[in-house]
Amino acid sequence: MQEGERAGRYVVEDHWYRRMFAASPVAQALSDADGLFVAVNAAYCELVGLPSAELIGRSATVHTHPDDLALHSSVEDLMAAGTAADKSVKVEVRFVRPNDEIRWALLTLVPFTGPSDAEWTLAAVLDITERKEVEDGILRASRTDQLTGALNRRGWSDHAVSVVDDDSVDTVVAVLDLDHFKQFNDHFGHAAGDALLRDFASTARNCIGAEGLLARWGGEEFAITLRNCDRRGALRILEALAAATTNSGVTFSAGYTVQRPNEGLRNTLDRADALMFQAKRSGRNRMVTDAPR
Image (cartoon, helix red, strand yellow):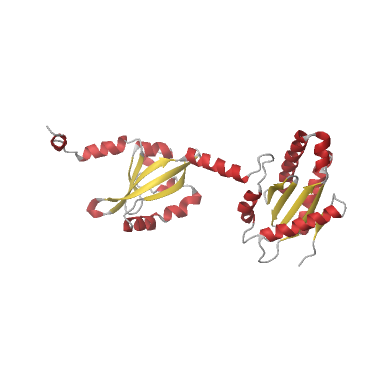
């Protein structure tokens, strides 16, 4: 008997498809035209941490991360575009399990014809949490100074804008340079110098708080960006940092300035850098700012 003839002897009945769906190791969910679950398999329930009884008749919003709800709302438009292009739709979203654990998932969405030719959606879901963690780790490493844990120049360029938003009152940028750091290194050794830089960065992070951003700009030079802060507030923070590092045996010179209207933060940083050199030329161990405009 030929292979084709042998295959033709079998008729795959509907209940076999249902058993295949239920037993599949790939998480799968079937939703109706209103986006409500009609069927979910065991792998899907395990992924989201909810039994089928708590999913059927509800939408994926029940376990979707709040920050991804807007993406969930756009699925209908994405499906329409995918259907027009005769392509499946792939979406990365975060699921929140009942214990608040967050899992990243890659959804592959395809049209599915329901009863009376209703437009349903079948989702095959792959847990990509480990992949995302590796990717995020690589990205953090590329943006972070390995010695101090502060941002590096690339990290500052990528993230500095994130500390400024429409509700920000003022943004201050400061550039700091440790005084006589080369002599410290020569006298105490590079290991002690590295420890000093790590301790300084840690202290700086504590002083600037959640409203600030710290970057190691190079060598013994650091950049600080402060949101919702004016010159007076920036001076208080810099003075607090100077007091907190008194016992280190090394002082710093700083230049700081307020971002001007319609000015890019990099231009603000360049001005703060020039003010820092002015502080150096004026005798070091001081903070210098420019006149308000």
